[in-house]
Image 1: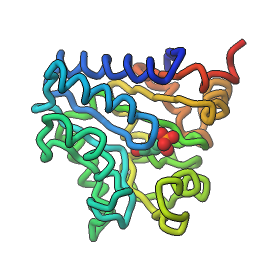
Image 2 (image 1 turned 30 degrees about the horizontal axis):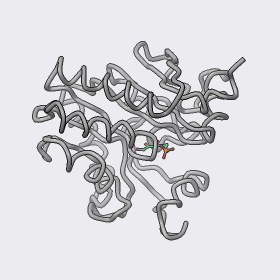
Image 3 (image 1 turned 60 degrees about the horizontal axis):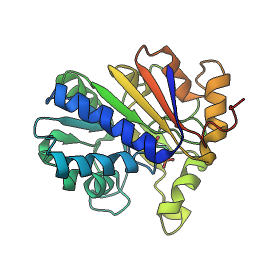
Image 4 (image 1 turned 90 degrees about the vertical axis):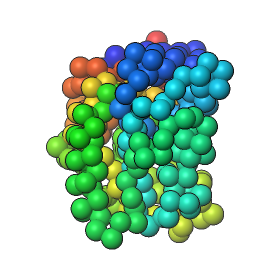
Length: 243
Ligand code: F6R
């Protein structure tokens, strides 16, 4: 796991976007793993700007999102489907059938998870996975205690995650209790991984990630075992470690 520190989130967004664009240019059929949440929004904005200005094409790119809430329709404003449309897919030339997000309304959720896993494999695996990190160290919706061997599965969200995400809903009662998420093993199969960590709120979890051993209590710590995992961190998130 390599750490790359930036003086600002803005600069981090710029460089991460450039790295993604480079990979799309080198491999137009790139399989890209995507995350939602606040952290990658700045990166998606840069990708959209570049697409409009320089015409980088996503016509042959395939995407797989990490996760989706159970029980929200695709057009629910807080669904991850709606998020991806709003921040990325509506603004670039990717065909919608090449974008994949777990279906949280599937009648058989177990089957949906198995099929999602299979689709990733059939696409040849994920070339580059983008990740954010939760305050408790989760990646995707893999909460502390999730087995490192996990594949795409249904999870019950912890109180801390539902609280953190309630800022997007009218009240905490409206935050779904379950989600579908790629598992930690699914994520680890990606050829390359970029974990983005920005803002002072994430300083404590970044400190823990740096100082603690690899353990299922800190899901993101598994990335230390990945040969091509890069942590992009801004100065604020790195503030508890600066010596
Ligand atoms: C999102 C996801 C989550 C978030 C994490 C951080 O698809 O899987 O793990 O990356 O909760 O969220 P933000 O970026 O909102 O702090």
